[in-house]
Length: 175
Image 1 (cartoon, one colour):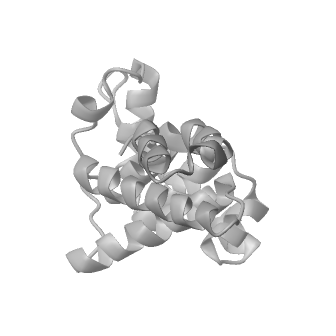
Image 2 (cartoon, rainbow, N blue to C red):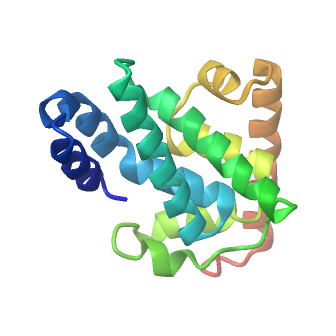
């Protein structure tokens, strides 16, 4: 669901003018949220479904007069992704076909970063993605995930070490 779809839906319900702020928040987070969900789920269709659900919940929240923020969107998206992972019965850790999904807006360096992220266990991948790609602070990640700040730092350290070892063991140019 693209952000414009929400605006069209809101306008049809007679709430178009009240959704301008929501639209701006969703537009500014759409790509980053999708990439975050993709990094968790490793499946483009599931990531898109979770993004749609997140946008729908944001719209419902705005109808209740509650504000929407970036961290709130990430929390809702994460909860939806966890539901999908639970329905699968396990966390998938294999690499996804990211080139098909991302070729239009990611350069080679970003593609390499996502390939490296795909080797990480889900918990490490999520924390490293939030910290290094989306720029959340350790404290923000702690609140978002409901874990101690020390656990966030430990996961970031372990993830970076794993990526460093992988890069050292891979001949240059083959990432």
